[in-house]
Length: 303
Image 1 (tube, helix red, strand yellow):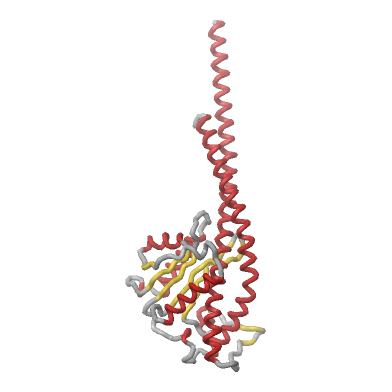
Image 2 (spheres, rainbow, N blue to C red):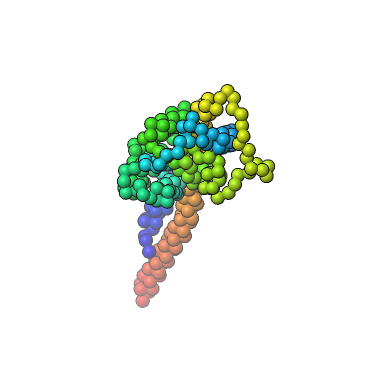
């Protein structure tokens, strides 16, 4: 059994750690409230926008003006992985990285041994984790998740669209954590470019999308012109979708960190209780030994 000084030192160390984890939990909870409000307020708009885009893309699937839905052979692929710059948030980062690797192995297995598939990480932790897999990595973007704004997200989304239109990449996928609640995050894999027609999205999702019990009607009259709508609405939707993914990821990070630090604080409290019990037992044993020594000495003087 450890001596009393060692146990006291360990109790003080665990108590100090508990103060840190408790403070980190409160900071994450405060930041989560703001991030959660941003996600909640933005979702109705982006969902309606995506519903409109499903109609537009399906009705213009064979239109040569729809350059964002151009059917190509996948020769060069980019997978964008959204993670965080900091750790101590449970499995938040590792889940996204594992899903990105699983996506590459499942969908682009023929490219893994070549440089035709690359990974772009948003967040430093994802970059560090992916380096262990010996894959082709672009320089990470570690600033956007620190101070997320729509302007920064739109700029990065535009650079991805430019790379697709310049045919540097034939397909761009995105992997991120969708915010469900403070304790739950869902990893999402989504094809950003090229845009898929609604029928193909339904086929990949394994179900038909219906509204009001009827299949979606894609017979539309475009005003002013179909080409104008495609050139204006689709890039705007892509920028908004990318921004929504970043909002979800940021909120998920704070939720995961708050939950992780809450569990760490509880574990520290439990450990302190166990160490205190161990300390009391050791102290009681030491007192008993001292009493036995005194009694033994007194008996020896009598004899």
